[in-house]
Length: 149
Image (cartoon, rainbow, N blue to C red; front, side, top):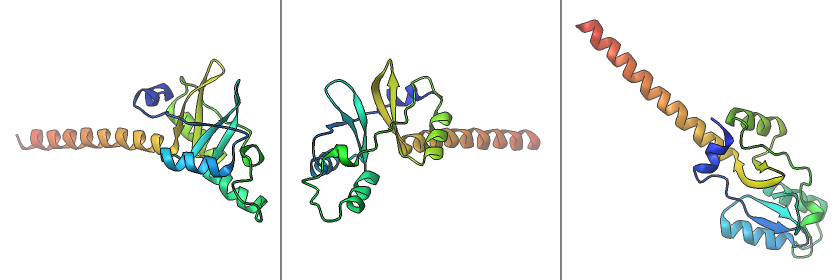
């Protein structure tokens, strides 16, 4: 299965924040949307990502500053690891595990089309495994019925 299939299944929604906004504003957005990451944008392009992990780093880097005074650009992750719609879900999961991240922007033609998170990938993977399990149970049941005939 490909990443683009996840985007069709209502996964992939993402929210943005400007790099000049504050960590406090980011937390309000994240709480309001019930998300754990925001794509950091300027008017023209993506600059990075702000995640819960960046919030933790914020408290370590600036222990004496109030989050209302810390700008996103001071603590965001600027190196974006991305996936393309045609990449497989297995490839995306492997990238996330290797980089130890939980969010992957989906980029096509140089623009972010969506974002997938580890939870999206796990849900899809569990769904596939559940279908396989049901198929195998039916197959074994049919074999047992045939053996009794």
